[in-house]
Length: 485
Image 1: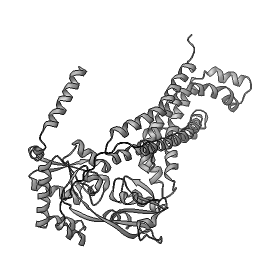
Image 2 (image 1 turned 180 degrees about the vertical axis):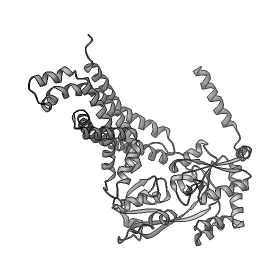
Image 3 (image 1 turned 60 degrees about the horizontal axis):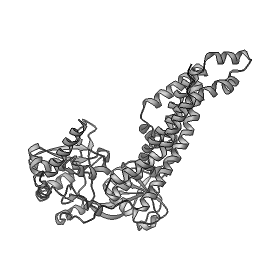
Image 4 (image 1 turned 180 degrees about the horizontal axis):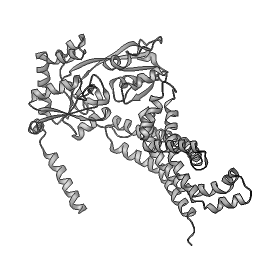
């Protein structure tokens, strides 16, 4: 059966590979929809949900609808992470990608771009009263935030001595700038105008570079590329594109040059392999993962022990509070807890990303450790406690000398298993700008334009870190198992 399934999958892959690329437009029209990929996290004015009725709106939604009408189909939005739009397009998850995708040399080597539909510039935003920069070189030695895989990131990465902080959302960098976690933010003028400059504590400090947004299409889909170009040209000539941009207050003098802009040509950039410096970056990411996991686990062990004792021996109000904490932390995603600690508490308590990551994971896993210790405490026979009392021991002394040593002995294998889980869950801290092992893998995959090599290296390093722990857990389970009757 397995061989038959594998043969069917292989046959299906061969059929798809044999389909002529020239039929891309015909297949789309036969389906009746233009599937376009974007990310709602990009927010207003690109693609977002109308707060009134929840409809999908935005200037790119309007462009996609107009484009689809001219192609004789209906637009269908496909949600996808912004930094993964190009890989998902290459996979065939949608027909085109359109979500503020900037034309860069790296992307031209992977996708075919349509005619541009918007011209932007990069706006540097700093705290009000701070000195700006005449050149990006003036930012050396400062922490500057931007979006991962953006043109602004490429510009900043070309400057030596900059601490470039990558973000996945457009509002978070400006929040961190307000809280002094950053010294400046460089992003497209659309983003700066909507999310940065409305904040009274921030100000624009200059513009750098200029780029264009275009629609990304698979290079093999030549007929679709030509059709999209023709539709965009028609929208430009009829004034429909200008009407859409004016409706969203995006039309300016730069857009007048769109009529002279042709379709960006591709560049011959073969995929690069993993190099020695990539391996060094992976090892550094693994070191960050181990450091975060170790400190967080120490917090979890101490916190879990306190919680378990409060639930079993504390006064009624402490038992209720400890139980509530355990249920909340176990019943909500750790990813949400990281967001709340880092971004949600920022107006009250401003933590750096590393500290927030350690606290977030440690406080979450403390709830799980508390359950382990509670089970360990319950496994200690009641007669042990009664014997300690008969010997005149206080509750505290009995806990330290008799009950806790036995309970911890029972709990040790579970603690080792939880450490393995924590090691893997540490990959979630990338959402608050920490570059650990998994984040380094995604960065390298984009750099070398391939996921297999970086993915295998990342998996090998996780295995190298977790396998000794799993062996330790199994050994503890064997050694600490009760003797057969």
